[in-house]
Image 1 (cartoon, rainbow, N blue to C red):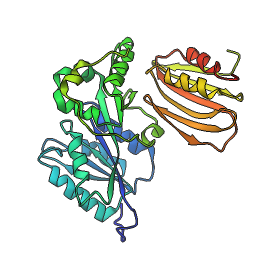
Image 2: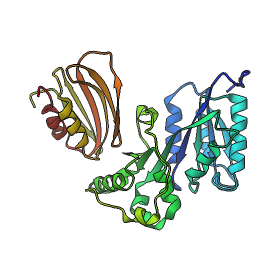
Image 3: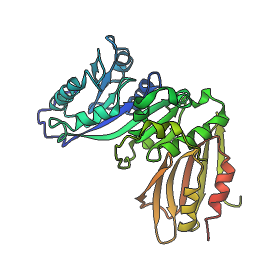
Image 4: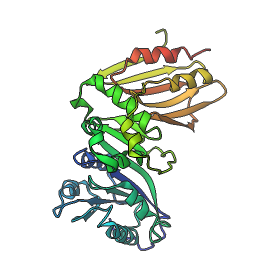
Length: 323
């Protein structure tokens, strides 16, 4: 990235914090994100290593974005001032559109959020999203990790339940149900090697109130317990389902359909034609929003789920057409 002469060219920089316990897959996720775009001239990556030797930074340097490494400490404690200083310098020198911060495995996201509220930063940077990568093994052993581990999850807008391919597939629905019960404000997506589509990451996050729950609540876990066209394709327990129909979809029926989707359906997107209007629904990890649509008046939806019965999903959706 070349230095920008006018520091006011970019009104603010979006900060995406990637958190997660040790070995969850944060660097894998960041490498995938950086591979999505060919032009990284407006992106800076800050990597925080807890030890004296930076490993993750070396793995990422080939990606093509500017790299800043903070070592010999954690940005949640000894390197907090260094983080503020580094972000201030990054803003002044590069004026980037985006800044990725890969926190160390022992970093508390609340410290980064507090740093961004510092007077030197709050007028030129905003926290766009906190993405936490969670090794599915760690969720099963969550009672052993304490409040820091929970904070990494509770403060996330998006949680990637990673390495689900290494688990009995029958356990994944129970994990997703537990997480949605304990962390109702978070989007939760099961992944293999942090595989996620770009739109799921870049979709605008829902506002969050960052209030920490007591560890006793966290440990409680909680149990949450064809005439029309459509096609189901299966690969490695991830199922993609496509639906298209030119008929009118009942809004009330479709709303019930969305609310009743199992947690294993973690992605749905496309236009929905309800007669008087057609809008695009964007559903990620249990949360959704609507956007305007100026294309054809048709319902055309794509679903991604973990080990779901695609035909059952399609059948329930078909019942909403023509009602």
